[in-house]
Image 1: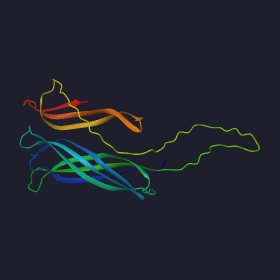
Image 2: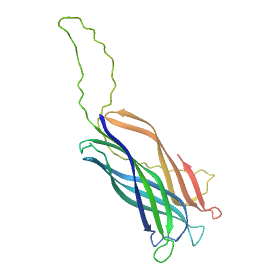
Image 3: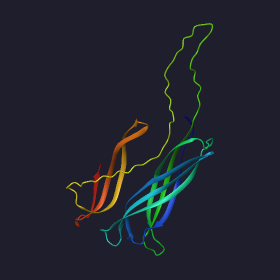
Image 4: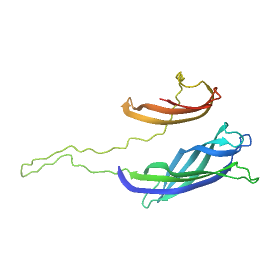
Length: 232
């Protein structure tokens, strides 16, 4: 494959929304996570179409009672275009999207109550577009009037075989260590995947790794009701 264009760019996503009526007013935002899901990339003539969803997960304490912790998730669609001269719709995109900067602030609603949240994020785009290229190679050399001595050397080159997006669901029951308090209600789960290796087997890619999790929950012990435990 031949690299036709590389480009780094960014665009802003900003939205204000209200929390549901059955949730408590916001006293303080304790923690927020914003990640990108449902990425959709399309190559067009001289530009790249980028679509996706920002998933904002917000943990806050309620203003009625310091002991109340609420979690709210909001999906924010976004789309944009990256100008890339010389690319066409038949070419192959390789695009990485990443949240570069983010801010989450509490705003008053029309009644003056702290029930609105404003999310302001910057989505970074690292794009590379490639195209298949036919290369002529010399297979043999000969001469009718003199001896020839052919010098050969191995050449390594990349070959594009295919591209696919897939996902799988993993289920496992976790037993909490005795040093942690007994859970009453799960509040939030954070996680990331550590990829240890990828192998090829019977026309399939086998990915192996570990999912590292942190689980926040409300414990049955009223003296220290919020607990966070690591799980791997």
